[in-house]
Amino acid sequence: MNHQCVVIVGSQWGDEGKGKIVDVLAERVDIVARYQGGANAGHTVHVGDEEFVLHQIPSGILHPERRCLLGNGVVLDPFQFFEELDALTARGLDAEPRVGVSGRAHLLLPYHKILDRAAEERRGAGKIGTTGRGIGPAYEDKVARQGIRVADLRDLVGAEERLRAAAARVNERLIGQGSSERVDADRLVSDVLAIRERLYGLSTETGRVIHDALREGKRVLLEGAQGALLDVDHGTYPFVTSSNTTSGGAALGVGIGPTAIDAVVGVVKAYTTRVGAGPLPTEFPSPMQEHMRELGGEYGATTGRPRRCGWFDAVVVRYAARVNGLTGLAVTKLDVLDTLEELQIATGYRVGGEILDEFPGDLGLLEEAEPVYETLPGWQTSTADARRWDDLPAAAQAYLRRLEELTGAPIWFVSVGTRRDQIIHVEV
Ligand code: GDP
Ligand code: IMO
Ligand code: MG
Image (cartoon, rainbow, N blue to C red; front, side, top):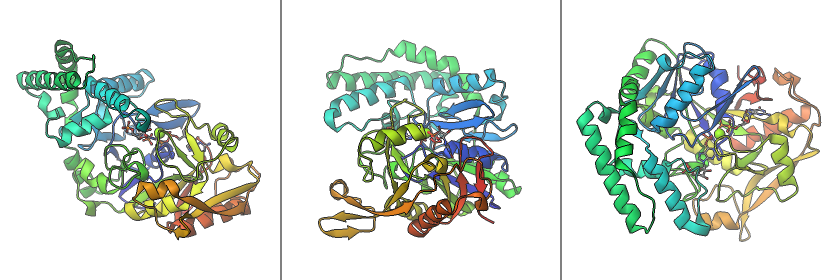
């Protein structure tokens, strides 16, 4: 892949293996930047026998010398962030000098988590199944123009005033909701002021850093969190996260123009998973559900919740290819399908006697949708040692070629295991 500024974007419902793909591609770049989301993300990277799960720090951090940035579009939980940074340092990585945070990024503070929990409780049976990391309330504050940004930490007095005002506002809201939880303003102030200098010291103009790097001919990866179907505009609203996860959010979320981006790689699993509530048209019935969950180790990297599994849904990925402008696909976890006799791919949805070939924005239609399947033979051989396209069994090649045809996006990478070397570079 010879591009200079590449977006890596989840193209299903998250957990597609973005961390692994970013780690592999980070080999060839200078900067890796996250552009949205927060510690709701859980990006798993395996280096040798070691496993790292990154929530806020870009997945490029495991390569020495890569600069890792958190853009303005991110909501930053400073306590979790430093815990993650310290854990990386304790594992022998020289992480802190390589990390930069946009001064425009909004802080996600403990009261956002209280509000997230309270909102989920109020939703009752209609709950979204959020990660409980405070994401929705932090973006609410940002859009309501009452958030606190990293740059606001420069001025000690001003920062304290903002924190006290936020605590009072949140407490009023909690009282109004009949909640017995309260924000302790003194504790909030002392906790935030304790990390103020350290965090402010890492702040930088991410857009400028990336702009200058690109002008010098350096390479940049923009790492998405979550996936297209969790995008607040394009996903299965209201069962979505609160940010624009799709590639349009990438330029916006780091502070560069969209014309600076020259490739968009959509990461997809060779099947489908989702964690949390909301529609999943190709969801397996039992016992296939449990079987695939065990084969794929499908438990959430952030919350440990079991992921819901289903067949590859080409309607979803075709839609994701369009809204993201995907130039290539990275198909992960092909090896998880190795033992299956037959595979199915959803090619369309049947709704009230009609076939939909477009992913509907209307959740009511989606709930009625019956996937139309095409069946392909399995390969029943291990693909874990494949390193070139030609190493793949013919049935696996046919399966992948069919995914390309149905989604309209060419496959650039195929991942056949968690390790760095378990990757096939398909594109020339
Ligand atoms: P992300 O959020 O998109 O980065 O994905 P997660 O890390 O939440 O979930 C993907 C899981 O699949 C992780 O446990 C990865 O280690 C694992 N994984 C990634 N690629 C492959 C692959 O090709 N084969 C297998 N078996 N596991 C993979
Ligand atoms: P990565 O980056 C999978 C899901 C939650 C819930 C919905 C809203 O690892 O792919 P939120 O806490 O964001 O308000 O939750 O979004 N969700 C994810 N699902 N992978 C993720 O991140 C997710 N981040 C949020 O389960 O359904
Ligand atoms: Mg994940």
